Length: 441
Ligand code: CTP
Image (cartoon, rainbow, N blue to C red; front, side):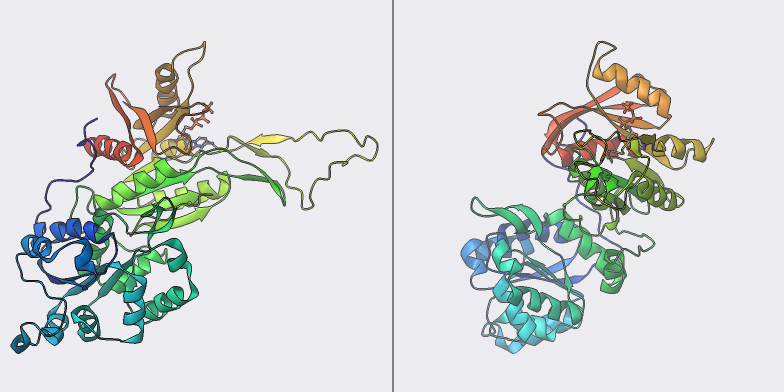
């Protein structure tokens, strides 16, 4: 695949128009190691970074690492370098304070205004945007005390980047992971460019005009659909499919990392929204069609990764269908009449007419059969749908659905060339899809 194995990292980012003074606070959690990568991203972008770890953070990553990466001395308490009054100066002069990871203890101290070390002093003296990225075990994150502290901080204008879900330190999984440094960087870069109000506004799903500081998709608006539609039959039943939404979420995440403004139309997933992405939740194919058509009017790219139901029940019944629904024949099973849903992708292609805008990408889950191979079916579908790219993946009982690894073939309209990507993580597959889109853009 064209991207670097194991990474979607674009080459070192050029300095942003304005370099900033950033204080990177590091709490005492295992995720402190990820803050090293975040620090590198800031310094590569030309920012001036002072690292202020807590004493317990230094148990995870030592002072020499922070000093070497930032090129500055590192202190944890207010008793070093006293004539410079660092406990006041650092916060006052910062353009951005970022705390990653923010432990439950640090959130509690910040919420209650405690100031018993250098970092908590910085948090009290800072008048610039403050970003905190909590990371801890799920139970600690879910605890009412932590949630109350997060609410207090949010009300005071601190921008909280919610933890991601996934594997935690031990065998347990759940919300509590520190998001990837690239995602943290993307949010911070956006706050430096627009301020926290603009970013909070985007997260509230209203959307903002995009002007991301870096990345090959900077200034582009992209719409991604993900998940699987559900077509209700009665108040308790629906026709659905096995799509987890993971691949579509990865497509949205990588687009945001590459600087795009992303609208993610999400059908029935439990996944955590990638940072900075505007999420529009939908349920049925008709909801999804309405949301896509609205968002597509301003889009440069539409990626249809959602599994859209081709059929829906012809009638929705307000009351639950009972097992013995037919008094004349108590053992009879009902016959459910279905009607066709619109082909949203084909309509998008039709409605853009001769114009090349937006670039439209379809996904196709295929199985080979006696009519042809997975690729044969993919080529037919590309011709039938008329989109610019078709990402074809092979499905089966143990393939693709809900997995973290995927294998795809990317077909381009009017070309016999096929890009084979994978087996690779869904983020890496997403990177290959965006590489192909960028060639067209
Ligand atoms: N799609 C769509 N509207 C539909 C069905 C599918 O927009 N009603 C989109 C999907 O989001 C995907 C692409 O079309 O990007 C291909 O979906 P797929 O289900 O493979 O295609 P179908 O046209 O339903 O073909 P098949 O006969 O293989 O089911």
